[in-house]
Length: 279
Image 1 (spheres, rainbow, N blue to C red):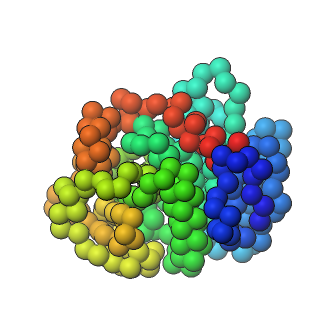
Image 2: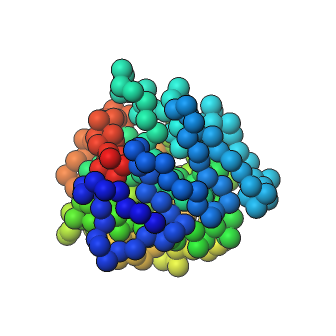
Image 3: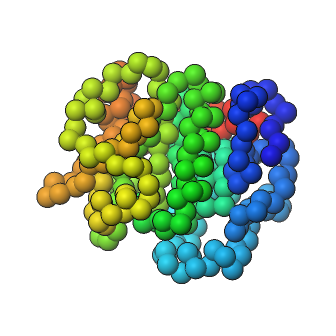
């Protein structure tokens, strides 16, 4: 695996990226990976080629057309439904994917709570990470570790992870899309997250299998601070408000007025996060 020649996006020389994960560059076409599917560029758009090995998962997990989901469109490189591109009016379109593997892609977040705020998305359209197949566990852990270490190095901060996982069924959608996404937020250390730490969390091993078993198809909040202890809140009779964790973290870092990404989308900062990785 080759690194970009641009110094601003290099990792530590001692850090070797697994061959199954690649940093996306807008300048160079990367060689095909050994994973079950990959993206190929052609004429400014992105086509997805799927091999027989991945068809089993496609049948098991319901998928929407990319035209119905802004995250699917951003991952696939479809300009007309890519929210960041639509807000950066008049600029040439680029596919803003920072890092990807066969089943996951990292994209910059609109309404960033801090510099480098990134979303890790399954390429399959699922409502939460709890709905992913357990056999994606190894790939998920590799991508999560790579993205976390890259962000930590780029922004000299510990990286906090959280997900507001939707229930497996029902019509409650907290965001413009019901596509699962894990937030990666670089925050200064120490960071006052006492209000978050004191919630009645259940610690678990962080695996997709245990996440599925604990959530049992219900809505949940997942939180993983830099100490790498995964914690879970399961919705019971009460449900979590939209952008629940965004609000708590924004308050913890003194940016309480910036918690709502709809009111503060800041697409320019999202674009800058992508550029630090890809250019």
